[in-house]
Image 1 (cartoon, rainbow, N blue to C red):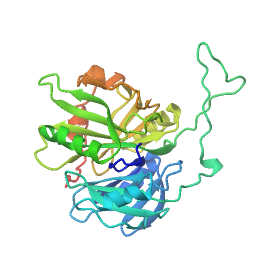
Image 2 (image 1 turned 135 degrees about the horizontal axis):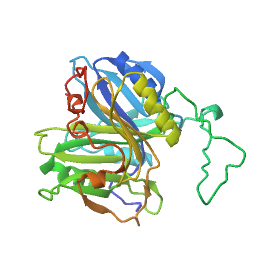
Image 3 (image 1 turned 120 degrees about the horizontal axis):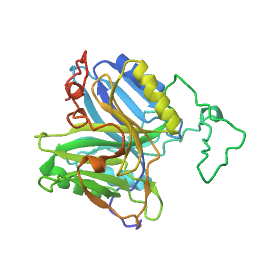
Image 4 (image 1 turned 90 degrees about the vertical axis):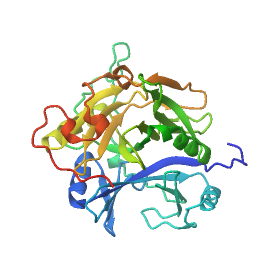
Length: 345
């Protein structure tokens, strides 16, 4: 990147924040989902994966009975990026960060008035050797390297979450390009792929990655969806966490079923991004995803604009339920004993 780049240069996505009316139910779910609590204070619970991020999810208590998506946290490339951010309207001054790992922080607002947290100088976590999952060696038809060793995945346990992979939100479809333009002009964020409506050709989703030039990065760390149903503000779409391998993902899928949680969509493989996906409702009604085997892209990767039809959503897997689009549990096929989820603020 140019030394005179006026954009705020992001290094990586770190965490997502969500507000829950029932924090204890949320805590139980996220432990069963594969996250590890690291700190509880001030009606907040910080959760980590097994990676180097101090935490990758923050659950906060809400007191109005509503659930609330509270934005993402990003690590920036230098103190200069915080200085840029602090000059923007609505931003806080640079101050000490009071979460795990410390560092300096600026909390700014996006074009929709939603918070974005930027951190620099946070101490990376050093995972213990016992926390790192054993590398899986696959025997393919032409390359058999696992000789005299056996695949014996753990059973009856949560998936092993590595890190936060991405989060996304919905805006009114006519505001989608304006919101994307703000993000791409404010940060080193760049479109990877997009989807358009086959009925009216309007863009309905944009997948966005951190632009690091030749360096390969995740296919998307953030995405923005457009819907005519959203009249003002934003609505949470889903947040996704990388797990260590497909065995861990599917073991975790059946573990969550046995725990009585509600599966939304999965297991299957997406087309754009290629990741193997598995979506779940948490107790507040937010959709959370486990994924594995996602694409990496860089500045030379082509971007695609595809129709939003079933064939571009998944290569294989279950039929897409209406609930995946509406975020309403009652729209799942065949569901009985529908739980009551709090409304979204």
